Length: 110
Image (cartoon, rainbow, N blue to C red; front, top):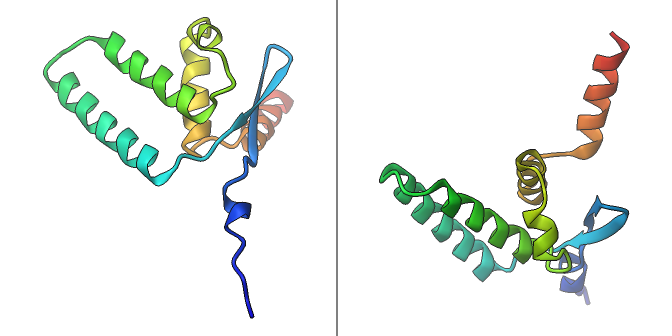
């Protein structure tokens, strides 16, 4: 008999390091994924209505907290916008830190 171990898909496999501490990045549940999509769609609609950019950042904080619950909100709010962007890209799987470092190292050698 073959058994699929679903637990292997639910454990954190990625981490971020910030201020000397490591935080696990948790994969979203299906419901969280749906909620994030709806929030992103609502945000896109509100941006077309020229609503506050602050709403975009509040949603970004919410997404980060959802994916990295052990990272305190006050630390997130203290980050630079570029760091927030990088974390969001990493959470979505759009940023591979190893590739980024290799690209930066190659640029430095030139």
